[in-house]
Length: 593
Image 1 (tube, one colour):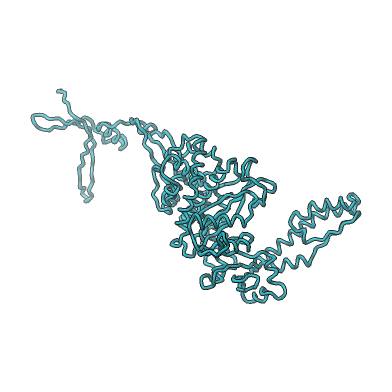
Image 2 (tube, helix red, strand yellow; image 1 turned 90 degrees about the vertical axis):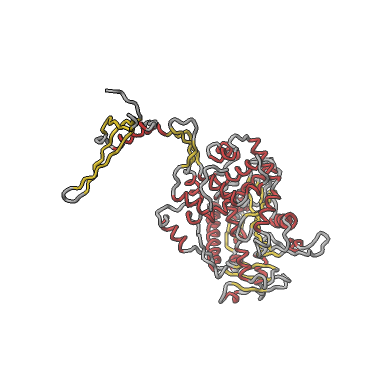
């Protein structure tokens, strides 16, 4: 036989056959053939008949004849590395969409580190050193070029960020407090505190702890937001700073550094005092300011009690048919007073008071028993023991103690209790804003919007960002740490709103016709809480749970057989992960930048 050369290939020949029944049948033969030329004509030589082989075997032979390299399935692809990607990609994408990188400052190493610190605080709040180690375990470190950063780099970036604070906050104020974005010219402000570890920070001091950490060194920080609670600025004060002093400090920032005039500042009772109000709109020489600030705050209990005394303007008969009434008093000239009564709040305060009174009596009962049994005697000794517990629940003013060398009598001061109970459920707001600009309902709504600042504090301190405790020693580092948490809260505020359809967040809270009444959840939010799953059968998640779910979207380094380089590829995202990116209006990115 003459040896012939030529390319081999797999040929498929089909024959059609019509049976007597009229049925059409197709027969296919699969042959291995060699093609060659002979005498100027193309000839085909059949080398093998593969028709009886399985289709997979035929496909393998065909691929081999085409020059493809076949390897075992387990060796075709190698994943050389895999890093969590979805959570940092989502937060980075939203930060870029909001223009946060440009707001932080000019592009460069310091900005990348600062941005990474903010994103890390949203995704995985922790100490700076643990964050530094974590960067190498996600795509954030590689894509922002911060995976190899040192502790000195971190602290240098914090110092750089602290130096940019005024510019960053001024940018946020232009976005959210300027008249174009904030026609009401309203801003919310409140003060909170967190304790510090260590004792060398110049800001550390002992003061009223809002964390319930009595006797610990702490710092105070005041948060300024727009009317819907979007963080704009934050200021850190010494731990013993009072609310009025903090309010004065933030007003100076808004007026002098942000250049905003004729604002309406909303603050809690005790923050906007009469002395602060008098100084608020006067220049240093005592003359009135040309751009006076308005304000909304609440009266303290003694002032409310005075309004109710001696047939004053605040009487219970005002609330027979309504829970809100506007009154006037010569003690507050040029101001409007909006009195509100919330029956639900009144009942809750009465219940709580009775519980605390009973708890105090329970603590005093063993001491009285010891006195009766003769195990405790002497007025001084009895007084010391009773004094240890009488004010534990801040109810000492409601008890009268009669102490002798051999006796202890405890009685409730019912007249004092009744006087306090008369104020249950009442609060009175004060403002100089005329009714033509802000009616009584709008005044109450504005004041109750301070709940948004409280929500931000919960996010910053515990729920999302874990600001406390503070471990930094230098004053500027403490301020930088708090600023990072505020910027992370800014991102979290937008993420919570965008991801409401995937979480238990109420997407459309029902509007309140009566702002005095307690807020209620929508039927859709109640259904979320009851059924736990959406119509597609996917579970609803908490905000933190959604972040953790996004972390399962990884970026893998894939190496194909015969290749010498790796190809980055994302795992197939779940429907919830796809929707999370759709809700913030960006596609799932392969690389952060």
